[in-house]
Image (cartoon, rainbow, N blue to C red):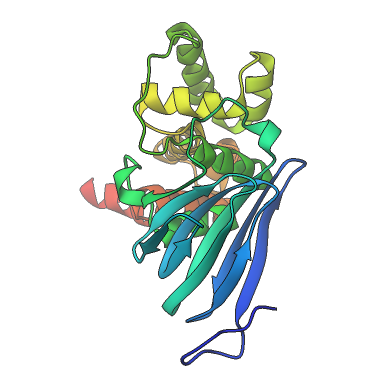
Length: 270
């Protein structure tokens, strides 16, 4: 276990929780105690990091960066770096990917950090992102993780010559008409498209990552059933949710209201 190096700190210097593990990808959230220092080290896999809360100084042999607001960073496999966490510690979501899974997907530098707000169309704060990963099914987690990986790092986007608009339109139609049945990984494999390219191309055309778009479509499908007079528990089942609680969480996530509140709102309107 790592040991906090100076200043006040709790008895726990770090805690680590794995959120998803697949053959070539792994996502985890880690708590680092205030003033904790990690020695210089490298990772065997590419690592995408999301600073959800707190702050840190990350150093490489050539440069360093201070992060104290929600940010994301990337370190290619073999990049030497060390970390010094701030007076409030840090909460970090990390995604490790084997290099052969993203060959030619990015032209990223070996090391880079940038604010989340500058690179997401709708800034993702730490709470909602973490809640989304913790409460989602394994398939949903996998798709969310790939969408996070596929987001560009502050680089100019080129034309979508490699993917026809017709193909993307067909994907959008499939997600709209049967969101609960759409398996994005299988769709990418069927069309011979890299899973990361699928996310990037879809977001550039429709403004949302495909996992989030599918979620919106599934939520709206449940609302349609509610507006047709079904009780929330039956609407949840008809829309493909595991149970009413999952449906309620998703409606609240996207609209800020529970299904019950939403139904009451329209009932009051007459």
